[in-house]
Image (cartoon, rainbow, N blue to C red; front, top):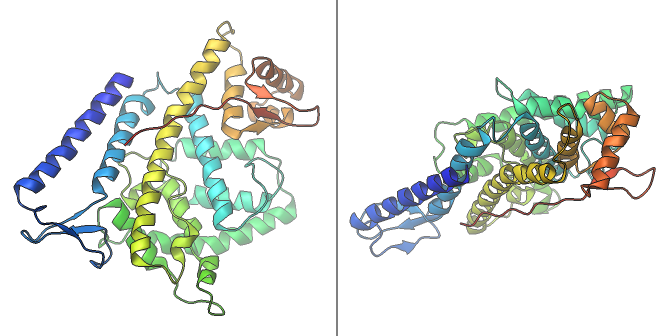
Length: 365
């Protein structure tokens, strides 16, 4: 799959090079200059030809080519990316989306997606995301079910608070979707996202403080839609999630247009890179497990336990027992096996087992 991946990346490089050459041959990039006041776009304007070209389009197109190549050669293969790895990818994506949701809505506790803290906000986050998933829902719906299965059931008061949050958030999601589905949006992902953000920005401030406009911004809704329906933002032809596409600072009332363009381009490229790394990181985690535990029986549940631990970052025996539908004693035995193999760490009998392996991945541009 690596050979096919790099072959597809080379093809995308050739396409980008051809587009640039056509621009030079047509005279479009002769005597070009940067126009900082050209409106909602990060553009090169030309003197010889009446033509504009976003200067960031090459970098974004290259990242899109990398994602397309990796999605076709690795992620789409049931042999190279089996069900356990796809579930791990969906769960890690869900955790990243929860981290961004907490930042967007100023939730200070409940760092883990399966912890007992912030149960009402966590369940509202899952319900809002489930409500906008396309049909068929696939891996993300299974990941949401797994989180609900692993976490402790909410109390009646928490369920009531969840319903209130979902009812209030549904309006923001619908409004953001309407703006993102407008037929007049540009095709370029960065310019499209910038236009959507400007359309959702609220100019009203409280007590002459521009930062107050971000307190009620629909930033969280944009990021949820980037996970459920990335095609709305022109990110990828594949239904791959891109958490953390925007930040609250983009919705400030005193933003400079030039700073807006730079920040949006940087965030789009960062979202592409994070998704690329997540796709490539999970096979490395599976390969490391296979090298250390190469004599397991076929019915062993140690590999699913490792994928869940790698996805959540930390697990207690009770949580793993609920996730795998096994006894708490059996789940504890699995976690101790991972600890003995140096895949988990435990600091005490009352502490959860944490994942001790990290797999750094980076894609050049």
